[in-house]
Image 1 (cartoon, each protein chain N blue to C red):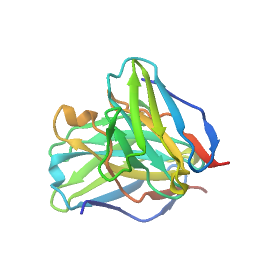
Image 2 (cartoon, helix red, strand yellow):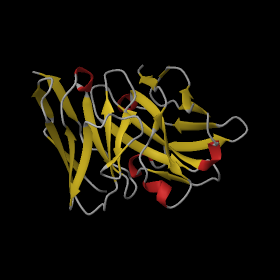
Image 3 (cartoon, rainbow over the protein chains, first blue to last red):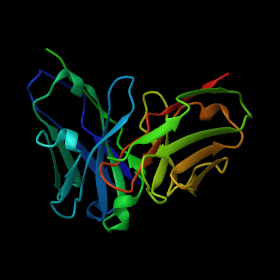
Image 4 (cartoon, helix red, strand yellow):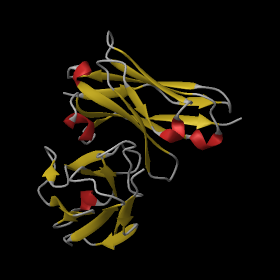
Length: 124
Length: 107
């Protein structure tokens, strides 16, 4: 069974950084893209970026360019999302979500498996 | 960026009703449109991909269709477990934007 298990809730001060992990199991980790999506309290879904776990390529939403870094560790089938210079508006639930297979067509697939979400609270 | 506009933003309906939610893209996205269902406190769930393909395990009362840049999610006969928020998402090009959501409530 395919699962994505994320790290626990975080509370951070403004200006700090947070690093959220997402451990994959039940499939070949390097064969599928991974997205990150966040949801602020009472708000809709916001796409943050995508990582190709088989290589080093990433694509970040312009809004987060310069503040977000997505990485992966193939030895543990884990992807990471680090967001820096946190502000109160970054308070949200952060999800990893599996995308399509690592092909051109896979970039255009839906997100079929989601992590449970990690709540990040930014407050002084 | 491609803008996705959903309507309505909220909807009240009864069990057994037929319900339609619409999503319009600001430019052509071919058929690269996905629909998700989200219940409070839970992660989104993929219902429909590529505009009209039913994700494995999703009941057949859910269907999707497309006409140009307009996309529709239809629930043929609402069940109690269908009351949730629904989002469309374009996967044509990054950033892979979502619609603002449609909250489906019990009448």
